[in-house]
Amino acid sequence: MALNVKSTKQALNPAFLKQKPERKEIGLFKKEFIVLLNRIDEHESEEYHKNLIKDFLNSVYYRDKHYINTKGKNDLVIHNNDSTSSVGVLIEVKRPVNKAEMVDRGNLNVKSFQELVLYYLRERKTGKNFELRYLIITNLYEWFVFDAQDFEKLFYLNKTLLNRFEQFRAGKLSGTGTDFFYKEIASPEIQKLQTEIPYTHFDIRDYEKTLLNEDNEDDRQLISLYKFLSPVHLLKLPVANDNNQLNREFYAELLHIIGLEEIKQDNRKLIVRKKENERDSGSIIENAINAIVSMDRLDNIDPEQYGENKKERAFNVALDLAITWINRVLFLKLLEAQIIKYHNGDKNFAFLSVNKLSDYGELNSLFFSVLACKEDEREGNIKTKFAHLPF
Image 1 (cartoon, rainbow, N blue to C red):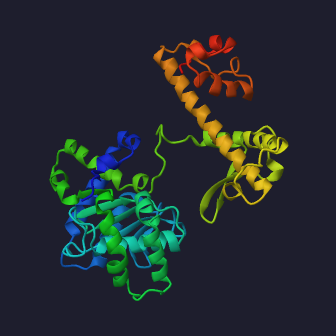
Image 2: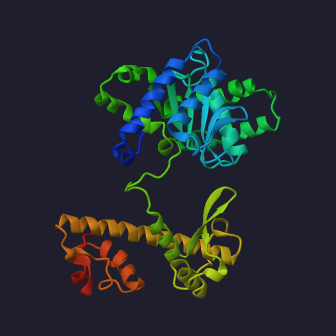
Image 3: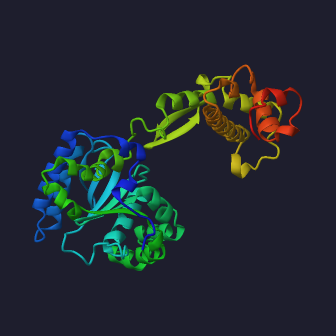
């Protein structure tokens, strides 16, 4: 079976895991959790249990913020915002007694997972939804949660599966029913990938003792589950004070320095060159394009890789160069901070400053004549200027 089954705690962003929820939030979660457990009725329909999940999630987190409902053949979906926004989470629900179609930790290749693959491909390929976050299979008791990024790698980028899905959708295969897709198309591919499919698993029955315990101290055992089912996790919302999150103002300034801007097109965020009347001649991308064109450096460029015409090729080559430079500078800034930290805050160990680097030429020398050279191989004043900087 899967080699990397995670607990809810292991699946959470470490920065989010560190944040302490308010007592009233855990109290509400506990109250609605008890209601959910008490209302599960193994004799009732799948539709009944779908509504339980919807009511529970809305009561604790999602109401008036993220729309939850059915969509087409999908049992439940959670939208990234209101009902007109893209779908962030797909949920496949089974009755608690439907063991034949429900996945378990020993076997994912059953109908519920085959259905999830079909619904994922319909949403991702046919619906062109680039903003899926998670996919869930549950029978109310057990929950199997899959990251959409893993589905992207394992299923969307699986050319065999995608081609057969397209043929199936176009009615070009011998079978047109969903059972044909499950058994003849999805099942063989899932079987090949069973041990590679990562997921998070939990069983809400494991929390019954904590729920019925009056001791508030024991409620700490509910925190990771509370966070796991929240919009912050399931919709991958930004986490406050997450050092791995790019500061929005820094991000905007960085794009400006490079000479790019972010636009929205067909529900996708794209990073493009600034509009012609808004371009800055001093930006990295414009400087690079001017140098490439003026020095006629496009003769040996592969047109298939970099574009159909000279203008397009100049931009794409300049973008590659700009990204390379920015990556190097960001890496060096982190390196500088670590070197200073190791030397107890001594600023003499700083090297990314205007008194040492006054122009692009000196930055270029830093890359190739300092960092790429052993200390005893450096020449002239560079050897003294960057004496503290290791090879």
